[in-house]
View 1 (cartoon, rainbow, N blue to C red):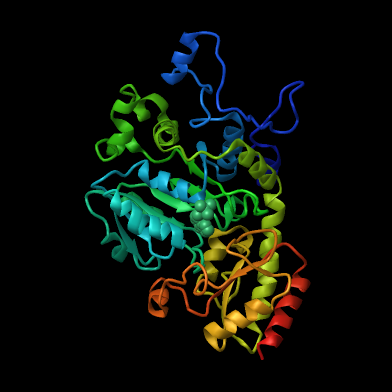
View 2: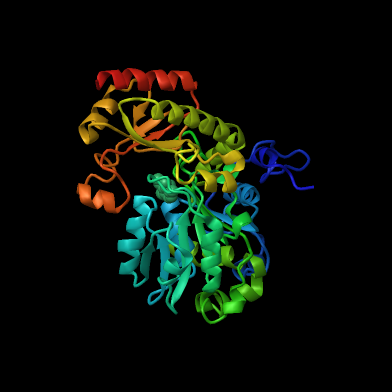
Length: 427
Ligand code: PLP
């Protein structure tokens, strides 16, 4: 019988045999020793599984990746040095110069820049679409050279909820995989593969680590996308790779093709590995993910409901509120309708009042970070997006007065008391 997510959080990955350490060891080693040249040669030829150099694979990292793959219900996963690297590799693994992909427009600003500026410099074109538009409208963005569709389950910081089933239908109609960044809900609240998504990415820096200790990322493959069906479109996976002894990944690795290519080709060449020490810390975070995420959501729901009742509050955005246009979708797509611990809202009086409010908070601290055990707050217009004009902010779906409130796992009463006293300072 399949194990429940709580058990997977605690038990998956490292499974010690008799006399081995109970806790996942940190393989703090760049390299691995072999007795014969033939053994090493077999590893380089990928004829046998094993380790030779940590830039490609490390046992600590692999055990943590295995746990995340199990949480998402995927067949294989790899850790990366950051969420940025995960999203870059996820797309670059199937797109090259001259190719095109389609992405939801409301996504994390760093990912938007990566797609809109850096990937264009590599000759990979992107079209951004309104994720709430109809299937017909979104389909218009597809071209013969389109290789993927991308979206965030819950967009940071706009908090729009992606209709994964709709996106999967569109992607598959055009013969491309759907890649979903599932950072905000985590597999505890949403498992995108169950709605037809093909590849999931994470910034593990957020809830998975959960304690603001390590920057990291992960890519998980469902193993469901049939690359061979579109053989020539995904030649990088289906045709011999001249940089890897003429190996054709789909033929050699079947459902493991996508992650194997990302590991032995992209990681080999670009080297954005996660340090084993960080993977070890991430694993500790994962062991309590199933306890922390529901608490974040419970607290966020209370904070959102409280804010909605306040005279000074102009608007509140949280998919757990009946007033949210994403409420129904969240009920359908998320476990117990719970999305994440992040709430956004605006105060009457706009930007200036937002700043006064944030400066008046006591323990809910100002931090760029989000999805952390400690409540933290950010004003994108003054911080992460400060280079944008009010008009550009609105285009990106961010109100200039938007306060991003990442609700922690402290006592909800204390968080609400801190908000109350800060609101008083703004009267
Ligand atoms: N994806 C999402 C949804 C994010 O919120 C972030 C960072 O905030 C990233 C990706 C990038 O992750 P990292 O900061 O780990 O590179």
